[in-house]
Image 1: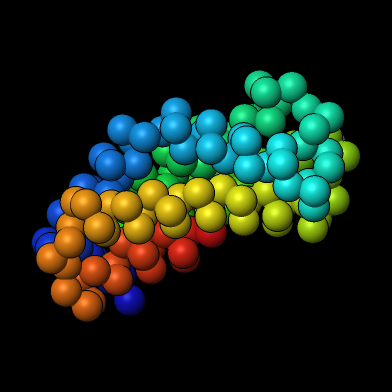
Image 2 (image 1 turned 90 degrees about the vertical axis):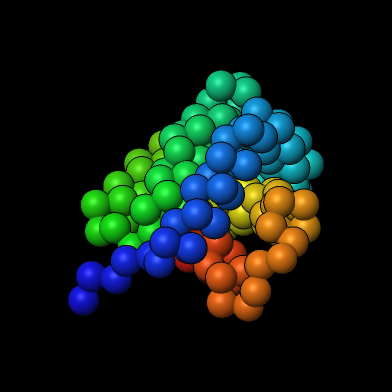
Length: 142
């Protein structure tokens, strides 16, 4: 079954994608600060900022595509491939699996804060199902 987002869901997804794109540097900076403070990710402190940032910009690009084109199989495949590459690089940088998961969890936390801001400021009148669409896509992405 090939599900397609409704026109209204596409509008919400594109709006959130643009909202996050406008805050890309802020999101990256917040995530870097958060992961460097996270005692459960000690390997992060052994990386340069370039190494730490690594694939995160591409992951954010994939999230934007997922919001723009939810349910598209090619996007799901690209996301899975990029996640695998990121995990492999982190493994080579002496991260263990709990650290990799925690690092991505920190990114998800930053994005959820921005999603809440989006819901409050950009789409305060969203109703139940439509309001949940972007949240479900973001949570499913991670």
